[in-house]
Image (cartoon, one colour):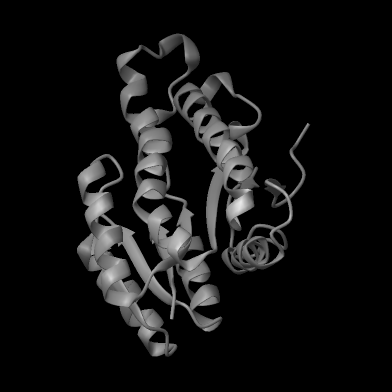
Length: 221
């Protein structure tokens, strides 16, 4: 059995994606800072008959990410699918004219350094398997910068560039990197951006392996 590793596990999209990949036969590794939240998510997946374990890690602490992903592969099986989709902090979203160089330290660590850390942790296992999928979930500011949310606009752009380079560099090894842009809010009643609909889209990105950037819905004008 191979593992679906989710960085940024939560009760919305994270749980829906974990269920979708778990029901497809993958074990599930959930990474987040809150141990109590992880216990609740693991219990929910266990009730669905999905093998899952939680690992406490902070995306701003590279060592904890690496340790958690290595432990997950040892406990559950090699990581075949990595999903990077933590929710940015509110203080990343200052207007551009109020943003200092220091204000970018955490957003860049969150959206650039942490994804690089995660990929470096799982890539050896994917190469040994001979296949893998790297999924990146971002908001609309990743492709259309917004002066009102400078930190995420700058950091998401860096994450997008990194992910797109991975898509090209790893394709010959059957390791597929793809990005899903969610322009608006994730809402349980949305026909295009509910957690369950987005989870299905992410699973299709893994199985169809078609192109790099995909949109949950059209970008607003």
